[in-house]
Length: 80
Image 1 (spheres, rainbow, N blue to C red):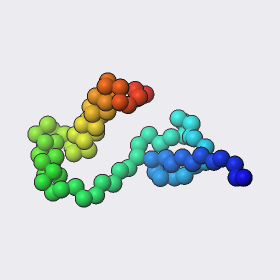
Image 2 (spheres, rainbow, N blue to C red):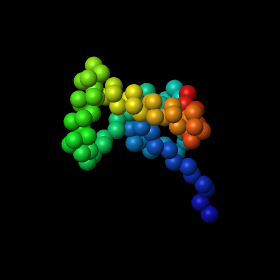
Image 3 (cartoon, helix red, strand yellow):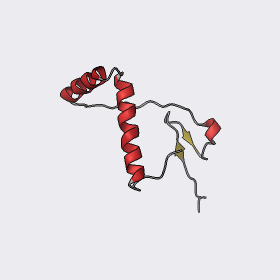
């Protein structure tokens, strides 16, 4: 029988056979999201412009707010 092996993937899609320590984890990652409707992209750019933010800043704020909401409802563990 083969030994049990757990595999981990970091934010850069590198594969590891053991969990990385916090000091080894990259501080940022990259997401590539495809097939976003053009109207949604246009509305997002307009919202970012209206708030004086970049699209990246707007999306990061929206995701962070949503995750905080889910944590408060007990649907996600509290973030670090």
